[in-house]
Image 1 (spheres, rainbow, N blue to C red):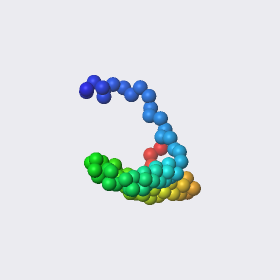
Image 2: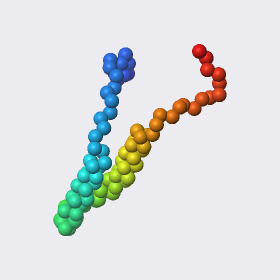
Image 3: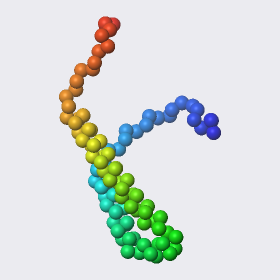
Image 4: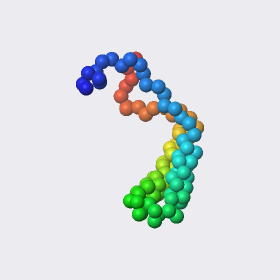
Length: 99
């Protein structure tokens, strides 16, 4: 296994793909909540067969999706602010620059 991680890097990692992150997370969250609501009328069947975890998994997915929506909206806003801000000069350390 150690030989797998040794050796020179053959190529650089590709740039990350940026896509419509916020709509993707919102769509996934809506799907989780819809699945929860669709399963709710059949809770008795799920309980009889020992599958209530399906219902609660959908609710947990929807709840975690709400956290995801909050996170990606803040990330998207921060990326837009960074792209709109003018390039600021870097802070110097106070040491003389060598030429």
